Image (cartoon, rainbow, N blue to C red):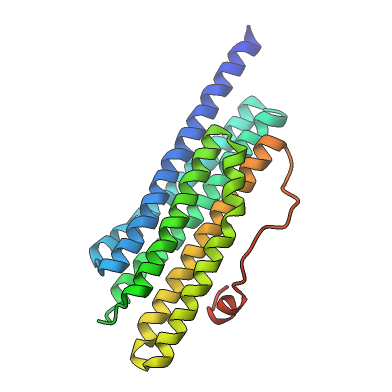
Length: 238
């Protein structure tokens, strides 16, 4: 009877952890969308709200970590059960980083004072954001449902995001060479594109965590990456 009670208590702990990760994921998704909306519409107040939301996401990551450690100490889970808890902690870390990247974009809104807003560049950034936000949503659903094929679809889709990022980067360079007055705006947009690409990398990390939780090992295949060498070399901090 005692072991049955322990198993039920562990299941409850695990459900609570999964719920917290899902809630944190919803907040991260909202931050991605709102940070780019704020940039596109030059909505400084919305940008500031995204920056403020980062404190909440940081706090949620701490709660998930503390609950995970407490559950391990109390229940002493083995094998697959332990992987579930480690998985929740790993996903929370990636979501916290996604929050940081969205916050960085939110901070840039106030700095974008230029009247120069070429539609082609804005549309490119929006398309890239839609793709990455969908990846984050799909991989979080895959985490909750233990859906390995869906997670692997996200893992393989990272190349497409890299390709859009590189294409956008080339457009930005062209605009900068055409008119030096465009440089400030383009540099800000370049950082934002790089942040969105990094959010895509974190979605891929979460896909790898889902694989680890289900298969009990790391993915040994090389991660599919597009060629962003020219981009990475030009953007500081990569």
